[in-house]
Image (cartoon, rainbow, N blue to C red; front, side, top):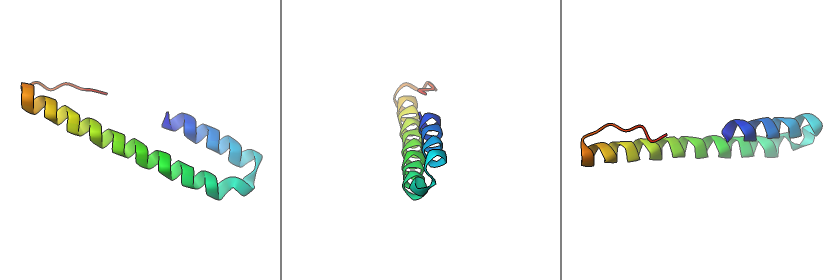
Length: 59
């Protein structure tokens, strides 16, 4: 999903360079959401391991 957002925002920037700053803010927001999701996934995987003793990849 992050790659899709990235491509769409780059398309907007190419069509209207004046929207660069707004698109850059959205790119950072998408990046931070992706990092948060990765960390939540890691927490969930560790929780499953603590409860079951088995390593499961949730992503």
